[in-house]
Image 1 (cartoon, rainbow, N blue to C red):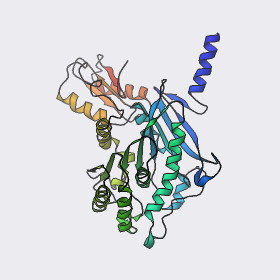
Image 2: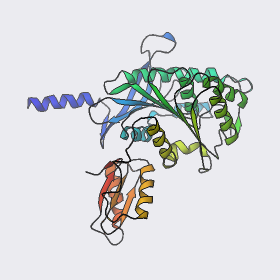
Image 3: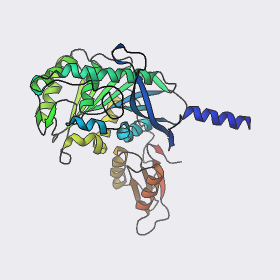
Length: 365
């Protein structure tokens, strides 16, 4: 009984109130204390959502940061759990992942601090640095947690968040190992209409003179916030100062390619996984996730398995000795993914030989 009581207390410490265990992960909301502008320690709280592996150890940190709506009134509607799926997918790759709302967004405390001035006279570089203040302090809080490895930090930002992450990289916090920017930029006020695009390019040039962490930039051909010509100009300005950034242009996606981060994870995860491997950062292992144990493997299996690996969790892959297979991604739980994969595998013939071989990024138990 004493041992059981001690175990219960340990579990409570491992999963704070409001958090939940989710198929091998622990996740839930957090309040991130920050002290901007030299104010009292922890005087403000940023709204956050955190996911991490459900096992002992210290894990490298990834900070996920959001964009900014064109209409400032929409900032109040934003929620940190909007990036829960991306945080969960990073946690499955061995990271402690924190999605955090900067000041002036959602329920985060503090006034909006990222104003860049009137459209005809934008001060983008200063606005990016203002946003980076919140990210630096959130990363510092995360590094202090018992389950974080503060020696390795990855910044992942979308749109204005990609711009903020790039600003932070120009004056990096301890342990910065890389930056992934999805459709990074500021100042879009309408489709293909950016306030003082020349000043936006200049801001990236300024950041690139001191940023040295490896970066991955991802855009889509039909991005209506930052089109191909502008995104390539921003990238050229950034690397001209000595910064290192791989640039990838995805094919058109939907009606506006600016949504790839939220809605096209199967297109960008292979790029991000490859980036992580090149720089010695955690992700799934191709040696551990192979079809070697799956019976009756053919080319159709291999093509489907590549799509499975690229897809968002929660996911599962099932197969049968008869050669049938099925897979499912993006489900509400790994159990739901297993059941869907088995249903697809069994098919109309109700193949009884089907069983799960992979769940998320690990062989099935």
